[in-house]
Length: 172
Image 1 (cartoon, rainbow, N blue to C red):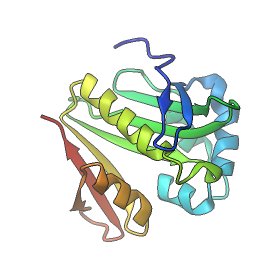
Image 2: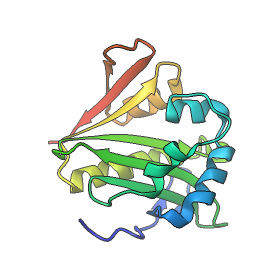
Image 3: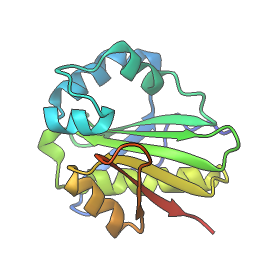
Image 4: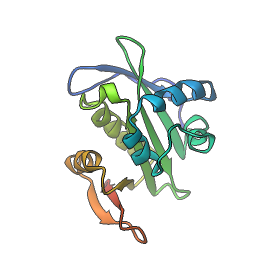
């Protein structure tokens, strides 16, 4: 679609400047180390499975996005270059609905990184003409559910699994 190797810097609500770019295969080890710095609970919430480390199947879509239907963004603290956030946009084949997912390393939680990345994913979905974005959350992930509700997402039941909830936001 477009070359988004590097995006404009984002600034969080707490003033942290983030340099955001698309992930590549060369980022595999950095993403593995990043997810080791994400709390075990947040890793479980992101991948909906408890695991001590991210595995190859979980890592693959993060480093092999097609840059049209899917995009994986990495956010780095401009001040020190640390990888502090990961955000994934995955659109369906009709480009009607996109699933989104955001992870923030433990030492940057509560500093607005998730807010900024959630906004970025919404903007990127809209640029692609997506009508609706969804996030599948564990019902135990109260922080993400609250954040998404504050950002205009509406909760819906997840058919077949009462432990999950879908949060959705429609554009236009």
